[in-house]
Length: 301
Image 1 (tube, rainbow, N blue to C red):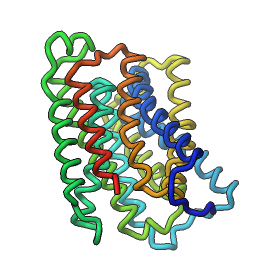
Image 2 (cartoon, rainbow, N blue to C red):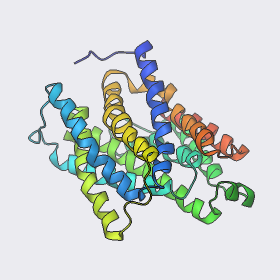
Image 3 (cartoon, rainbow, N blue to C red):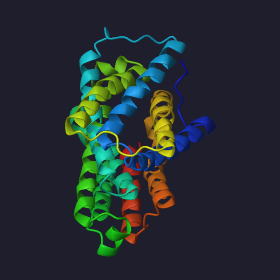
Image 4 (cartoon, rainbow, N blue to C red):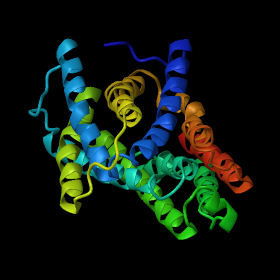
């Protein structure tokens, strides 16, 4: 195992920027593939297909799939939170824009900081974190302002539907935060990053697929392009991207990674504009700046 480092070196910087870009692109890909699969089915199928490459990688690295280290119950619970998180996020991206979803979903560190204040000894809400929380909340409020008729129509989404999507993206962020807290406060912390991911994928896949099957909304109009975007999600985002992210967390100090935390919503907004032609309104730019500053302050040690 690689020795833990005290600062972000060149490798760490490159990986963090690449991860941020990958996660920002992911939201645009989800919205694309929603045209060919229902959101719940896409999320479940993605988890199901990603189990195999993650398990194969563990076998290649000689890492055992273990359930006897006390991680089974918290691992199962993480899987349920993972299913809820992506049910909400994938559904949100059918109702709102990539740009708005990216700003709201990546408020996750703020919710982690709030929960950690109550659940993790020594991880208190300092004045700087409180300021970050206020800025992030102000950004959320600005992001969720009712869009103008022209702005909503320009994206082909009504204002009421967009608001529903915004709320779903925000709720998904809290689900992601719950996973992070569980990984820090339970015996799941003893599991390898790959094992943590495997729990989440294996538990969430049948739940999400069953939800899609129960509604009768599974495949819509898949094309080779959409299958390619879906394949990239499975391999590039989940199997490789998430594993690399867990590895970075295990090697580099979280406090030093704070300076990169605002990049993911920035990339999300950029890909929303590039791929879907989403409008970069003044309120969205202000919201992005407030949320980004809040995330940086909450994470910064």
